[in-house]
Amino acid sequence: KVKLAAAPDGVTYPDTTARGVAKGKERTTVTVPFTASSAGDKTISGTFFFSVCNESTCKIDKRQLSVTVTVHPQ
Image 1 (cartoon, rainbow, N blue to C red):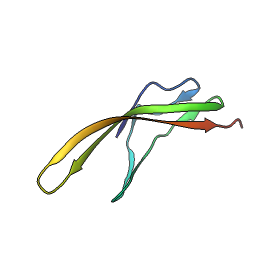
Image 2: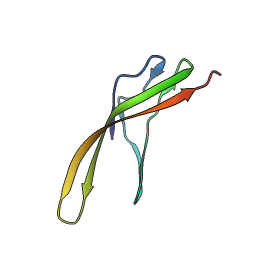
Image 3: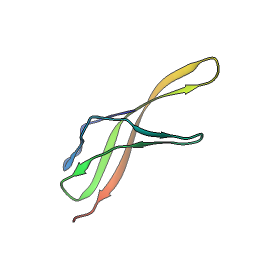
Image 4: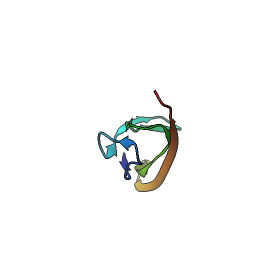
């Protein structure tokens, strides 16, 4: 899951936690739904919580992440 940081100006989230995860063997994708009310570059950020497991143990960890998206005017 991703616990989202405060939304940037012109962006709202339907929920402060993104849980839409698609897991693969080499990649995991998290979908972060948001609504933009203004155009421009918007930085979406938060804390990604995950676990890495093998047959005998699981390590729970977290990482800060961010991505900048460009919202185009309609």
